[in-house]
Image 1: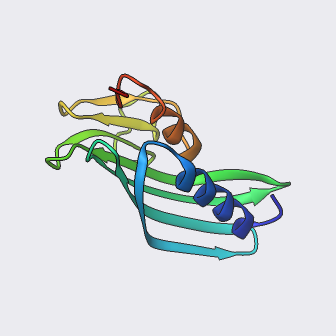
Image 2: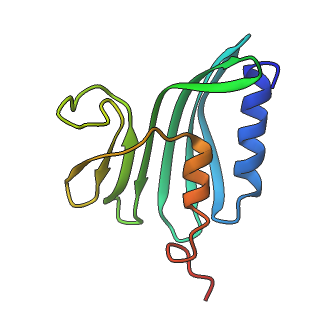
Length: 130
C-alpha cells in the first residue's frame, strides 16, 4: 500500500464482498498521505451490528494500527464483544489492549485490526448456513 487512501479502498473492498455483511454505513473516513481513519457501521446477516473504528498510518507499505474499537452487538442491542485499546484498564496484562465480553468481563486480549475482526465473522458457529 502506498498510502492511507489505498488501505481504505482495500478495507472497503473486503467489507463489500464479505458474506456475513449485508450493509455498510460509512460514518467517517479520512486520509491524508500516510495517515487515516475510518468508522463504519456494519449490519450482519443475522441482524447483529458491528461498529468498527480504526486509526492507522502506513509505514513502508504496511498499515500500523494506532487506535481501534470494534463493538459487536446482537440484534437486541446487547453487547457481544468489544475489542479496543483505550488505556482505561491498566490492571489488564495486555494493557491497553483488551476485550469487553457480553457478560461484563474485561479480559486480556492481543491487539486486533479490522482484518482480524472480519476473519472472526467467517466462523460458521456464529453464522450458521442452515
